[in-house]
Length: 315
Image 1 (cartoon, rainbow, N blue to C red):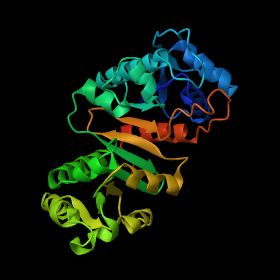
Image 2 (cartoon, helix red, strand yellow):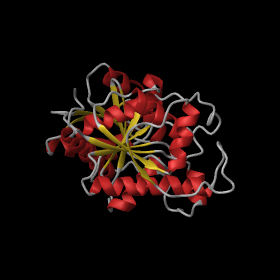
Image 3 (cartoon, one colour):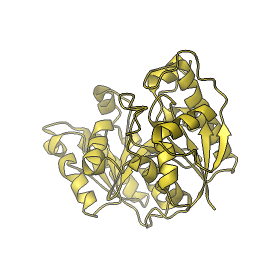
């Protein structure tokens, strides 16, 4: 069976709970290995009202800490979350796992633990693997979106829209889709400005940066089209015209995915030498420990990890 690693995320959040719920709800289509402190897995079982899943576990030995409380930021939880990701990723790079699925981390807890350069999973994985170019792909039934940039202010994101950056993201997106089983991948490129810039009246990024990048990608054999107005391109993708959309900044893509189908949306990281999927939600400290967290996203992320590992995403 395909071996998939699962990290529990921040133990003070809903990660352990949704991981346990997903493992009980997911048919045995793969062999799952849980990474995280043993006490966090036990806590997730108690919160979900289910027994500890009968699967292999890798105990990341980080004590709870005297300041531990469900729904609260703590350095111990930040440490536990990062260590689980590191151990799971190393096993994936060593070939012991076909893919990994991650539950949410808390950025404040990560920083409290001393990981000041790690904003989130993507940065941790880039550090571990030495990847110099990474990107986020959000996936939900009927729509896939890759982001030119994610954790940048809107002003910085606009400055990041250059011909070189767009061309590199198109290549990264194309190669990942082909590797994951999407033959003849069709990629639409969203415009940055309203109405696609209106021929330069509302901004020249489409003319000076995006269009030349799309032309270069087409010359390299990539089936790309754009820039297309962002207020309609996602609807066209949902209708089946495109296999993925390249969004120009974080919210442009995230809003489209989450409005279309938030609960089944998952994240995949491109540009790293391993397969990683993730739930597309945060630690949800406000509801942690209440047993009411929805595991739909965790189930979808597990399914996606198996599909990517087996090269059957298109199916």
